Amino acid sequence: MEQFQIETAQNITINQHTAHLGDRMLAYLMDSFIILAYTILMVILLLSLDIEFGDMWALYMVASLPAFLYYVLLETFMDGQTVGKTVMKIRVVKLDGSKPGFSSYFVRWILRIIDVVLTTGGVAVLTILIRGNGQRVGDIAAGTTVISEKKHVSLKDTLLRDLPQDYKPQFSQVTIFKDREMQTIKEFYDAAKRNGNHNVIVSLSDQIKKVTSITTDMAPIDFVDRIIKDYSYYTQEL
Image (cartoon, rainbow, N blue to C red; front, side):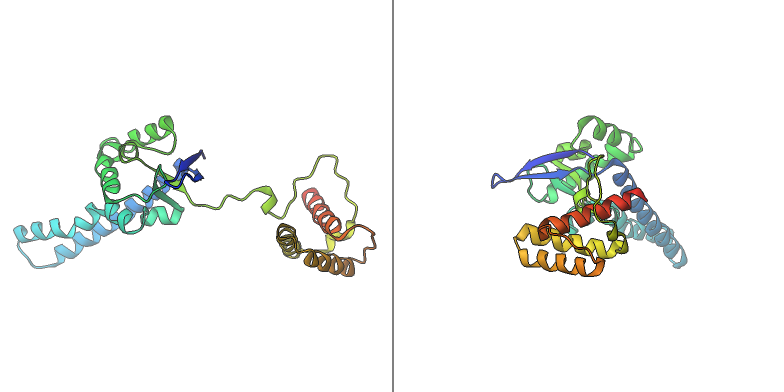
């Protein structure tokens, strides 16, 4: 997943992650299934009607417009997303950070004929891999790309701490905690440390000592941090 920066009109730099090619392909398959299902149901409904062929053909042309305009309509009214893109948590955005307008979505839609329809997606895949920034031909022409809105979790945001290889645990009593309990302790500790709320850390320290029967002269902030690290050590060892 490639990371790139966009510069807003207010000169604010924002880091974004381009959508993974696999996510875009899955979104495309979902959207294609929806279009196909709609088309089949529409044909079945029209055939069930007792109308002449000429009238049926005209009615078919009108009824097929939602499927034909699926991408440009949904991306316009769903702020850069289709049903498939919503499920995969990806979205069309402008490279300069602004919200795409109808003209941008229209250009992407028109050039989908080259990117996807005529080449079965070959040109789109090749362009995305070579160009970078998640752009197919339609995106290059429209000045857009497709980003991932999935939450990117780093190691420090999870239950585990990044420990050195020679780390030596100090309190084996931490194993009495369950993952859910230690996660709560870590979340409270990280938030209190970030906000400078020392009273919360002291309270956590006292409660941990009470539950584990640990006696120590360590400062509360160091003690709680050590407890989290020791739990991470024993968890990784399992």
